[in-house]
Image 1 (cartoon, rainbow, N blue to C red):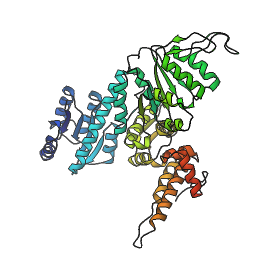
Image 2: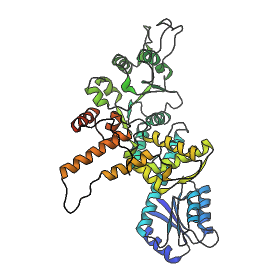
Image 3: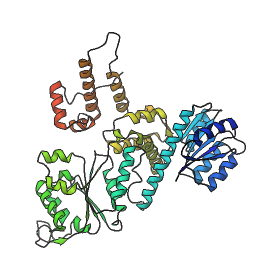
Image 4: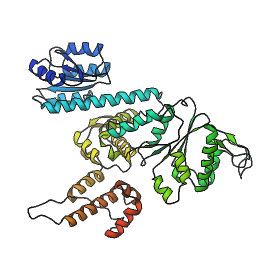
Length: 465
């Protein structure tokens, strides 16, 4: 089905120009010469993007925008005007406009804006469809994004949700692994049964076996009654084993047996209990490396990694950041009783360029803190923590300038490499694991690099002027 564009414009010259440009595209193009005509079209026809003039006979562009927000909340609205003012621009953005441009405009800019608006409208529809299928429980309400990486993840979730294959979700902390696990369950035929999550790193190793497989009465000190384990509880449903890499080798062997035999034997018992549970696991570690270093069983890894889903870090899907910020501002305005109006474009750009070692969780925490503390007005660059703004300036200042006399390429490369390492250490507060991850390196490689360069992990750059 073709996507639709409504052009609301009373000036015939501008309308003819836009008709000529978009008439050659793969869009259904509709026209309105007054605000009333735009209202009529919005009321009776689906529309993806509305390109409307601000000043028109009768109802103006802001009225069209407000009406579209009520009747077609999934549509994106771009306002055009030859009478630009700060007040009208602010009001348009507060009403939910996608963008605001002044005449005379660059036609390439308009076509790019419409393309971006169409993409955003499409992704919002896709997310809404998944949320509807998930009956509002699958967690995709918060898995938001327009980047190709995010769309690939969501597409894969749809393809594999209705299978019983084991799934291994990988990604850094804070990327949304549990959201994806919940979506996989609630989009599956098992959605009317239980999803049982368990964090393998949050339970002491000596208790985890009992948590997973249950125990009989008297199995150990304090076992005053028999207790079913998580696998039994998840029978005919789904069990989600988070931080699977933290499981001890002896327990890995027992889990492998459960996957092979589809039965569990409670601690202290001698009778196997048949279980039918779909198994979804997740980890923030590189399991290939864990296997090669002998910390994780290769046979269990192959059992778990039937369908791998990798969630990219936020720094690899920066196009998602503006939409995530918008979502979190709305969420915490409502939850905390605040009225932050929006985010300045300069602020979005600073946040978009940040590397986000804590990923979406870090971004959400930052936005929540700003919404709570500021309460109203706009999110200004000055509201963003100095650490984030300083890190951006630090990297910019580390880039050498090539003058007429040239430079020593080897030395400049070494200096830039050192600057990147220092920035990674700064962003991770000296944590070598996180710093290595930010640079796309294994920890062992990163540590060797620090030694070779005689750099101290505690060497974190101070303020940069």
